[in-house]
Image (cartoon, rainbow, N blue to C red):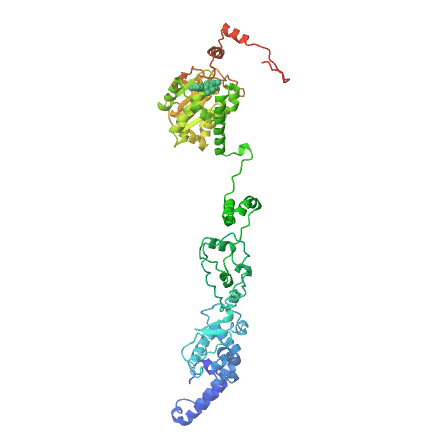
Length: 596
Ligand SMILES: Nc1ncnc2c1ncn2[C@@H]1O[C@H](COP(=O)(O)OP(=O)(O)OP(=O)(O)O)[C@@H](O)[C@H]1O
């Protein structure tokens, strides 16, 4: 021993000091000669040093806090194992050891002992902490301090290392792990009760023979006792057999059995439950049930699965096939009646014959030669054509035939054909839209530049202008000439094509002797002009064709009279013929005829 030893070692317990004194006294007594010339008597020197440090240092606290395991207090005689076997002291010890590791300030796993929270350890200086570590190292080096401690640590908590684990704490590799630190795990609601008594499932029932009669009404299977299934929390009725599935399996001759079938049920013969049908079905099949009891289920099943088709309650509820059947029936009846009965009047025929769709009627009509010529010019040769003619010459019929041909031609790209008319009603007549809607110009009062910008802001209208190859225009007599010029210029601009209408093929029809364009009385008070008066009319139209054959009137004299009126050049003979038709009008319904 010398004065160079750490002062903390000198602060050990009084008992140890006494033990040292005793030993040194013995050594001095034996080796007095060796110590005498160079050093003062060692016992006196050490006593002085002890008194000096004991008086200077807070002995009790340091002993308690820095060397709790080596303190002889409590009669432990420096045996840490005995100290640590006391839970409270062990906790205090490890808490203080953890507090002495400033380089690893890990957050506490749980509320520590008062040694940490009372501020005493926190007030220790860094130097004291370092010294404490050294002292603890020297303490650990002492074999007598740990008794029979070995160099290994048993993480299982069994006390082979001499470090006693309390009831709720373990020391693993210098880290205190308290089992209570994982108290949150207790909140996990995991049912870990081991299943020890699992019930044995019943053996599969014997195969049901296919000769089981399904029509027999037998008592339902008894409720099975599920008290043995204590391992499940399911309701008891869940363990009762499912009759529907059993019946299906048995009827199919299948050996598959429901999982929850109990042994009692498996041993009982298979039971077929008679199906309960709705009252309406039961009434219908009751007669057959009485006759053939063996086929009750089969017949009832058929009745339930394929209900009889509903009869249409009203005429307009009929399906397409029903309408077709009615048509055939009416046609047959009409043929029979026409063969047997005298020729009915035309009025009666009009009423009786079912109205055909317009497309079907036009398809049934065979085009005349002049009509066919126009259609070939338009569809086959792709010319821009304007065809006109008096009323009843078949302009509309021809136009519908042309549209049909174009739609067939551009079936993969129907946007190539634009069907328009000057008015909404005329557009509906041919299944199209108004010319204003197609072009996207609104009322079309602005100049061409403004209208072009307007169209370019409208993607749909712009797309129509760009995609259209053929423009159909019906009732052209009501299209204003100025509008016609504007549209032609718009087509050239948007399609970036210098040809009239930007190269769009025009198919125009109408009768300029009929309704004129709507005059613009709003702004400029100008007189409206016909489309054929437009500046671009002649360049836009390749062929102008006039239909002459009138189909609406078969009387050529009457057709000639109408044609004179259309042209405004009525002959004297025509005037006399019309006056000869004059007669007093009879109005038996009380309505007065308005004179124009
Ligand atoms: N090729 C044809 N064969 C038989 N009938 C035809 C033929 N073309 C037209 N018709 C009939 O002539 C009648 C008049 O046809 P449509 O209405 O097409 O004439 P329109 O010239 O359009 O008359 P409007 O100028 O008054 O509208 C219709 O009843 C139609 O069925």
